[in-house]
Structure formats: C-alpha cells, structure tokens
Length: 134
Ligand code: 5GP
Ligand code: ZN
Image (cartoon, rainbow, N blue to C red; front, side):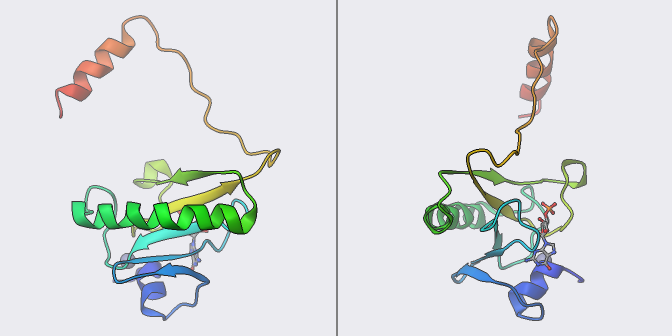
C-alpha cells in the first residue's frame, strides 16, 4: 500500500515528530496553516472515521487532548481549530485518517465557513432524513 503517512510511521519519510505512543503519532504538517499545525494519526492505517474502531478513536482523542495544550503553549496561540477532512469531497487528500490541530492567532486572516439560514421546512425535512438513517 502506497500511503505517505504509513511511510512516516515507518520512518521511511522523515517528519518533525511532536508526540508518539504505542498507537498514535503526531507530527508537524508540511504546509502549515500556521506554524505548529500538527497532524495526529493512528499508527495503523485506517482510511477515514468510518473505518476507525472505537478504541482507536478514543486513543486519538485522548492524544489530541494532551497535544493541543502543548501546541497552544508552544506557539502562543490562544485557540485552535480541530479538523477532520473525511472523504475527498471534504478535502481529504491523504487517505490515512488524520486530525489537524491548527493553532489560531488574532488577526491571522483565516475565516471560518459562512453558514446560511434554512429555507422554510428545510430543517425539518433534512432532520427527518438524517434520523431515519441512525
Ligand atoms: P487532508 O487534506 O488530507 O486533510 O490533509 C493532508 C495534509 O497532509 C495536508 O495539510 C498536507 O500539508 C499534509 N502532508 C501531505 N504530505 C505530507 C508529508 O509528506 N509530510 C507531512 N508532514 N505532511 C504532509
Ligand atoms: Zn496509511
């Protein structure tokens, strides 16, 4: 399997490692949104959130809770965005699940998504469709 993040886990491709334990690796993103932008991945290859077993998910979130405060303290950022691009439509380029910890600074000029109000009846309609699939 030709996975760039598996190669990083295996040491075939170098990375700036932020954190490592038996299950999780965190390293600096090569093209950071801001300096300190960190990717957190399971060492085992899972493509996306749907493939990720619950135990692995827990370990990832626990690691993120540990790493994010260090990213803030180390960069001086006061907040961060936690990102998961799940699937190509959502911008996932590397098909090995990874969470982005993106430190944010005042006036760093990044914007969040712009939402728009529902049309009449649209919220109830989509809600029903989602709930029917739970
Ligand atoms: P995605 O769009 O899949 O959520 O994000 C993939 C991220 O991986 C991008 O932010 C990109 O900069 C980062 N990336 C891609 N290749 C490498 C690499 O070889 N090393 C590191 N450290 N980051 C990478
Ligand atoms: Zn992989």
